[in-house]
Image 1 (cartoon, one colour):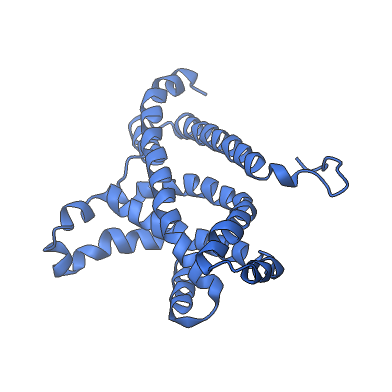
Image 2 (tube, rainbow, N blue to C red):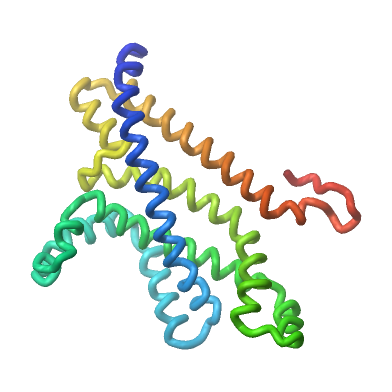
Length: 237
């Protein structure tokens, strides 16, 4: 094992981590914005909006993310009206195509998480809110979303970590994030173990930091649920 080579490759890989984090957080942010209305529509279980939301989730959760990236990166250029539009200078960029693919994919998974969390809110609480004269938006703002968010947070934390590692697929469409940079360094040095072990360690460090942050958020938002009804602390962390 050439530790000197691992040290020499570290600056380039650390710089590539910036793009990896950009892909992760921008995709999660856009996906979260899309997932909220999709989750709400799917949770209603009736109407055209619910049907379209279910179709969207079914398609993006049922097909590989890599195939979706290829369709966006290579498929959009086949349409003349896209190439002639004002969006083409942006859509021709591999980074932007990766963002679109990751955002649409994580939106489908996050919407499914929100759907389950919304349906898990006790129906009796909604009936009580309606009896008290709460309007629909008040029911969602004060009863549904606070509870749904707390219940969805552990599963959404898993989606965040999966999204971080899924950004490695962007390297196949020429985005030079951490994995893409590692592949370039391997082509120059022919040292797969040193380069990819270093990249794996960096992925582990980023995942570890994100998991700590997500753990803190879970404890912060679920602090009222860490005690049993008897008043004793739960054995669960």
